[in-house]
Length: 123
Image 1: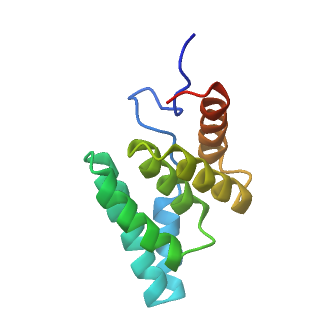
Image 2: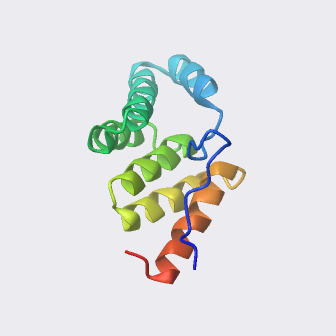
């Protein structure tokens, strides 16, 4: 049986929301802590892209504290947890992202995969 995988685009990247620019612009408009959260989101995503999930988790957890209502941040935090093998934490982060924005198709797809992975009892 094939193993479930986090959804990816044709280049193999995990599903991500396309709202990075909008998130950063909103953060700038909202103030310093929001700007810092946007920066941490960007840096955490870059760390994840470089293959450093431990650093990405640190940065994205801080971003989630500063931007607790940002679905994109929680989705990327889930990706970082997933990359670090923390599947339970990933599922919780994807669930939070979907709860915040049920139209976040990347988070919805990632949550489905994480739930299927758990149901299959895969390591």
